[in-house]
Structures are given as C-alpha cells and as structure tokens.
Amino acid sequence: MSEKLILFQGDSITDAGRTSSSDPFYALGCGYPLLTAARLLYEKSHTQYHFLNKGISGNRIVDLYARWKEDTLNQKPDVISILIGVNDVWHEYQDHSGVDASKFENMYDLLLEETKAALPQVQLVLCEPFILPIGEVLNHTERWMTDMALRRVIVKKMADKFDAAFVPLQESFIQESEKLGAGYLLSDGVHPTPAGHELISRQWIKYTDIL
Image 1 (spheres, rainbow, N blue to C red):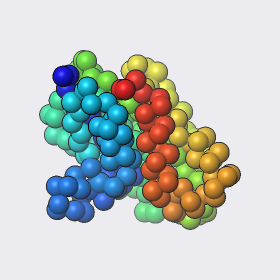
Image 2 (cartoon, rainbow, N blue to C red):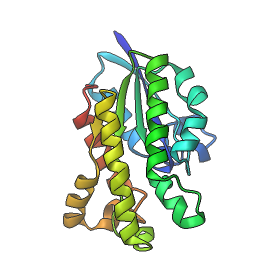
Image 3 (cartoon, rainbow, N blue to C red):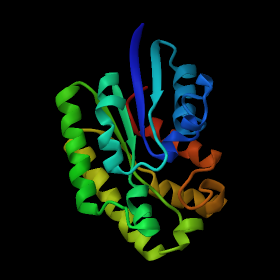
Image 4 (cartoon, rainbow, N blue to C red):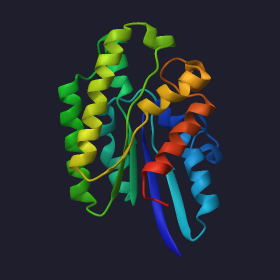
C-alpha cells in the first residue's frame, strides 16, 4: 500500500477552527481540509493517506513565508495545498497592514522556489482566492474586486510557472451564489459556510490528480 502525506496551508479559511481546539480529533479543523480528507480516505483505501492542516487564521503571504520551513518543509509532505491571499487585501483596509500585489507575487514566487529546491518531487496545489459581494466585502467593494482579481492572476501565474495544480474557485462561487445566494456560501463575503467549504473541497478534488 502506497503512502502519501497531504499538507494544507493557508489562513482562517484553511484553519477552520483547528488552532482554537486542543482536541487532536479536530486537528484538521471543520472546513475543506477535513471534507477532502474524509472523501479521499473513504474512496481511495488503496493509498494510505495522512493529512496535516497547518493553516493559521489571519495569515498573509508574509506570515506564511515566515513559518514555511517549520510548518511545511520540515514536514516533508508529498502534496502541499496552498490557499492564501484574502488577508493580503483585507488587512490593508482594516489597519493598513496588507501586502501589495507586487510583494505578494514576489513572496509567493520565493516561497515556491524554496519549496521546489527543498522538496523537488513535491506536488503543489494552488487554490484561487475568492470573495463574494456581501458582508465585509461591501466595504470598499470596488477595491476588493480589483485587488482580489490581481491576486487570482498571480496565483494562476505561479501555478503555471511551478507546474502546480490550479484550483479555480471564484467563478464557482459566483455561479453557485446566483442559485443559492451569496450568504449560503460565504458568511461575510470571505469565510465559507459548510456549503462553501464543500464547494472548495469538490473543486480541489476535481482539479488535482491526487485520486
């Protein structure tokens, strides 16, 4: 039986409560990493999957980079999944501590360069950051849309450069919100509801070749 360690990285969307619990049962949180792990474990018993969730609420790309060696490279995963970008925008509106698009791209590029150097066989999965125009996004809506679009272009560019699987999410959230309502998927325009996490998980599995 083959073995594979899949590590999820990112901000609160990935964290999904895992850092607020002392119970090891909740080590994957209650979001898309848990949903994805559950499906893989149930449907693909021929592979011995192991999962780690290292997402931390509030992280920007610079925070992710600062802890990358300890929380990612030292774990020696076979697959690294990254979802980052919304706080690089949001924190600028909140307290002017965001990360501009140019620095976001440079830091993301450096992070992946170092990853490939340390783990040349690792499989990368880059998830597209997303928002919907409700809740927090109604503040500075036009800036939100513009700034997040820039981050999405950058993530796709990184996926192409580093031969990573790219998981598109924004258009799926838009399409589903037209049927279900934005608040059914994202509680505040940023953070997924259970249905929103299920959408991410389904897209993750669809656009990777993990299975």
